[in-house]
Length: 318
Image (tube, rainbow, N blue to C red; front, side, top):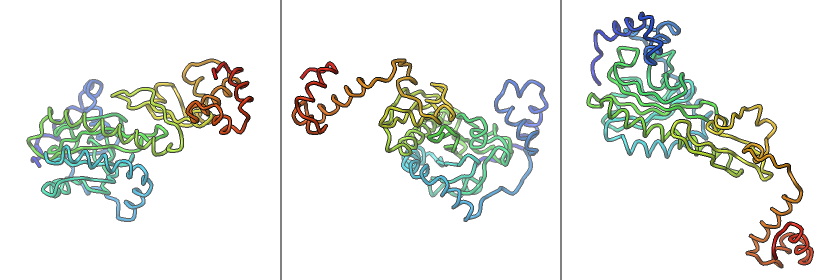
């Protein structure tokens, strides 16, 4: 890992004192939060907060399902970036590192930097950094070397993206960090794109796992907000929506408390009809029977003549 610049702290404090820099730079705005809101000193060498074994186990247990879903994504991500000296890290919404993947030759560097399981990387604890600033802003960030608040972290490059749970709440930050001097801004941006895609995959898989007993509809897939997914029950009522779907449709927890009808939510103002429901049942039975009317009638527990009368009433050909 590169050596801290002896002038980094001075540069941070000078930027903070500028009356306009915080308004024009997201990094300086984060530096201001670090110094003013959190009372941190860029040159301070402080003991890093780290959860003990029991507290870390409790944090991991709280996110058991998310970690199970994320594990293969983290493994795949590490296979893509690990040989270049990067670590793949997943934290919870408090900035606590729950998982880390790193190569054997890079373990010492990441451990010395404090990028270990149980370490707390919130912005309030560490100042401007990939994990903490991503969680504070709720959006992808790249914090490259001297963009860190603390002088002790200027040798690290961090590429992060937020992860939202099946209810649209911020639940984690996915991070790829490098302690190598040869990782420049261009490489950081390329890796950042991989991180964003991986975070969105964790969100999709987490949503589908949570609503495994429901029908999942994909409304859209946006690079910025992720996959707009709806979970629909057997009566076509919407019982769940991903963050992207909530943003797209203006949904809130209150709106989903009494599940809305799918058609109404998607702009179909037609009133519910018993005729429509019967038509759907008949078509499903015929589809399961391969078009055989006698078999469809048996599936529905009615006579063949009754089936034909109902088909005629529903406008279905025999």
